[in-house]
Length: 102
Image (tube, rainbow, N blue to C red; front, top):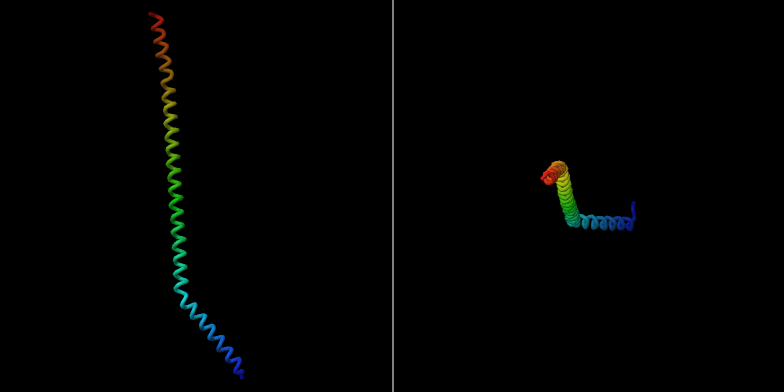
């Protein structure tokens, strides 16, 4: 048979455990609410980072497209200029010849 002191010590331990469990039970909604708020904040931060990243990528894509358009226009102008070059030279020669002949 257990002594009175050991029984009292055991009851005291159960009372402490029960009080601790009750406090944890009462704190559970607060803990869950804090966890939910933290997860919501993390999700919002990730969403904000994604939007910022997409904006930067969009600007970079627009800049690249603009640069590509500029380069293509420049190349087209150079190509057209090269085509007109011999014609202009021939016209100049004929003008010079016409002036010399008169």
